[in-house]
Length: 231
Image 1 (tube, one colour):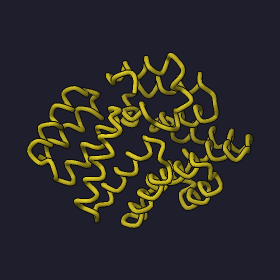
Image 2 (tube, rainbow, N blue to C red; image 1 turned 120 degrees about the vertical axis):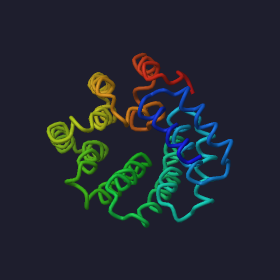
Image 3 (cartoon, one colour; image 1 turned 180 degrees about the vertical axis):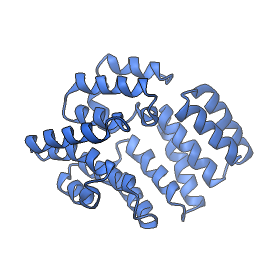
Image 4 (tube, rainbow, N blue to C red; image 1 turned 45 degrees about the vertical axis):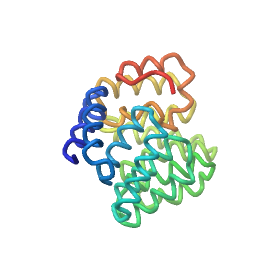
């Protein structure tokens, strides 16, 4: 069942073959409906697809079944994050970090949750230890924008583009979207699509891209990814 769930993740998140991925995941869940790691993988796929209630149910099941697995806490965090439940997301990512304190990506996610909850100062403090890491660099344009430091945000965005745009174009799109620069955000999302960026699979309910959802280009991109348009 675990191998099936991993195959389903590959089909959906990596290959954007969502229908087949969901069918394979359903088979994995039918065989092992309470396996924590299968539930965790299924939650991630459901979050990306837009089934947010089911994602939270599965992620909670996973954590309850294996509370010492940091990946499952991170999955629960993302299930909350996709629902704009930022306090709960922060708590779950901090739990994951207790098990794996060196994860720059999870620290980045804690900063995202804090910033989106209105605590930009707290987000900046969290990023401090990884300020030169890819994920620290990705966070700073948005945090400085939220703090009202336009010049620092501009410089941080230029730094992100120069150093990491080839490997993380979605982060550049997120920064532009958060700063209200919609045309640039869509330009970088198109670039991410052409590069088949892994993180683009989580486009649909990415809170950092919330300002794009009312633009007609957003459902078009969702459709191009093979995801259902709508809630």
